[in-house]
Image (cartoon, rainbow, N blue to C red; front, side, top):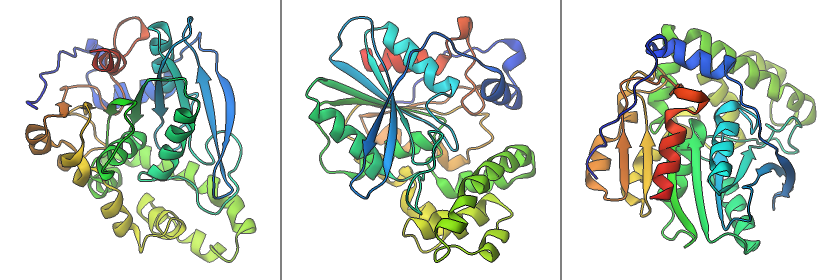
Length: 318
């Protein structure tokens, strides 16, 4: 499809990428969302915790919400989406990836950008309930790449899956990894790395055959983390192999359902390859919107309802 001309106009104080990104990640609060947790047992012996919130009236529509790196289903960018969709007659299933719900997962593996088998398990579970005729997916950052990869790597999608929205999507993982290693993103990288290392520290004692203290001590950067842990724990040769196999960019031409990507041009986490102009122009199901502002998941707008949240609702409703 032709590239969508964005109408997003942020407040004057939120035009800088750093300001919008940090404010949205650390200062934003969202109230009025009542979530009910349900544990989904997985075939490999692990689990996912799903946080449900519901429309006021019984609904046959549900949106699956996927968080970003080291996020969870209580992050404002998730709860705000759940709240808006609930207010407009759509139930919400906010997924906590493995190890992200406040309780360590059981296996050595955890989650990553391309773990579409876990998204598939959630969708299959929802389909088995035989309650929802329309299913949508909204992914944020890492969750956006996962949603796009899921939609493009499968020859056949469930008939109930009607649309996907991907926000601040690192479609080309190697490029995003390089971007996060840049000096301008150092503060973000340090924060992410600290959380990730804390998450796998307990695994040193649980799974000494898989990772040693010496291995752990070599992790100084996010690239090191993906080299030492992410790739090895999930069956990839190394970090580069993980990036190559799990980047959603290569799968975008195959997407067969309406899909919207919203990537801000001033998102410092994204490389040039993360703006798939050619793929969007060649695939009638793929819509690409590139607002000038918004940073990384920082589309600040009026009344604490972000632009990407309004666009997601409009997209799946039309």
